[in-house]
Length: 304
Image (cartoon, rainbow, N blue to C red):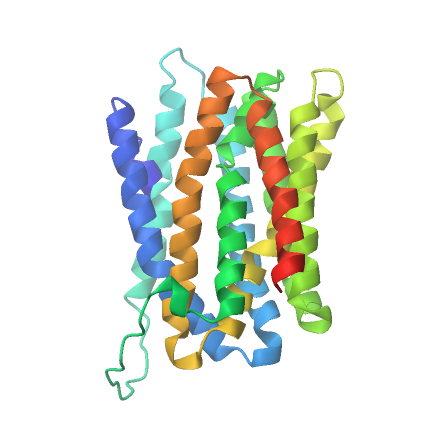
């Protein structure tokens, strides 16, 4: 719901505060949610379980992008950009409905106990999991915010509606491919698909680095589609791999550790990308991210 704070924002400070609140909320909910998915899914079907979750989440996001496109087209433009703040305010409606539904959920009571907390020393993790998390952290350093893809597209002369439409392509491909990718991972193994996903990310980012106004008119749509395929291949796979390698009694803790390491990597990733964009040029973040994506693909081959 952080976007709703943008309706009240008068400067970057409020935007920063809203974004921080949003990330704190995500940090609190992600590990328990993913642990529930991992515990409820049979071991040989975890890939499709995480894939189904990502598919439903992303197709909902795609519907949101469609609504945003329609609203941007419908609202009259003005120099103060008030048409955008109206859209942020309207986003309160689905967000509020999503929270309201929770009050009608009735869960069966079950016995609860207090287990021992695992030691969180990185050295005491299973060696295979430890190396895998290091590779994930390396990849996260190059995985800057999707906003840079939108900024890059806008810098090539695309209109706001065209940028939103390209982002819709990403969400649709991501949503459609997530469940099949999870099923395929259960069938042929998660390692192969994760390597393919990281390599695809590297190639997509290198593609964005090489775009120019002449070839961007058609290539941007392909790159956003491939970027959606990358997300479908990797988003659920990382978590299902951690769930497979973690002890069952401490699965939520290790999934939370994975989310923490990814979050730690994503913060400098966007800071570095922003600095490269400002100091070197719009293509620099994509050369950097593409290179780290290919290195991470090699890393997965070596450690798993």
